[in-house]
Amino acid sequence: MDQSSTVIGTSFYLGIPASTSLTAYDCVAMAADLGITHFFTSLQMPEADIHSSLNDFRVIGRLGEQMGLQIMADVHPIVFKRIGGSLQDFSSFRELGISSIRLDAGFSDEEVRQVIATAEQFGMSVVLNASPATDANLARLSKLGIPLKNTVACHNYYPRVETGLSRPFVARQAEILHAHGSVVMGFVASQKHHRYMTYEGLPTLECHRYTEPGWAAQELLTLGWCDHVYIGDQTEDQAELKSVLQAAQDPCLVLRIRLNPLVQEAEKSVALSGSHVHLPQDFELVHRARGDRQRLNRPTILPQKDAMKRPRGTVTVDNILYPRFAGELQITRVDLGPDIRTNVVGWVLDDDLTKLNDLQPRVRFRFEVVAE
Image (cartoon, rainbow, N blue to C red):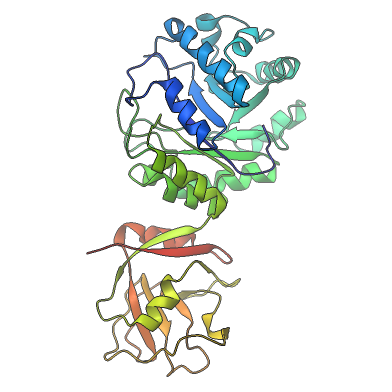
């Protein structure tokens, strides 16, 4: 696996009732045709009859070898009893076409070191668990000779509704893991196909459970919380797969807004013509975009008929009454009063207001208009 660039992947599962009309094999083949080469699966789901599905797994593994696909499998020590092999022998994994194993709970530090040595012997890689990582245990692993630099650390996904991780926690984990040189991976949920048995989606963050996967991936990548993003559910929806691929091409924080019915084309074009970059500074009352005011051909922005109050999350563009700043885009961080020099473009949806906390200096963002 190339750890140096963004990896986009999706998932497939065997031994449980399918969430798609296509088989796991066909879902993998379809995703591969779209350009996705990385796949996640689990060999340790308690409700899965993995043993009876090994032949199906081998068929997918052969497809993977033919197409150069990378298959990551989530494992627990109990997996060796299910499919054979041991900490010293990964031939059973290689027979299935698995190229990397992700270690969930249940492995001691010494076992982790043994797994890494065995994986190297069999031409495989090992993915660590990102969610429980701390500075202390990462330092301990490093002292034991377990490599961390460029090693992928993958977050859990959370099938049970209301149990996904919080935004501040994922941000802190990214900071800790990146400081140790690790690459961070996380999951977003399909909105079309949910995996057995809770059918509630498989996101890393709880706030992404009902978010379109492309938008969720945009957020994880733009804010630097994840370097690799996979759809946790098995999906056959091509639009979802393409949207996550697109997120890697143009990582950008998406803010959904409701337009002001009185907005004029001039200020609307400034706000909606593309993406914006937050200025390098952090401001007390507003978020400021790198300015349209420096553009020689900027549109002439006339004052709106009536100045409007600007509650938190109001998107504004300064007009010609602010001569030096005309064309500058801002988003209010607090409730502000009306100002005839500032035109209101619209308002960030209530559900997206928490994203304003993540709108940090130099972060790219864009607006998505939502109809009433």
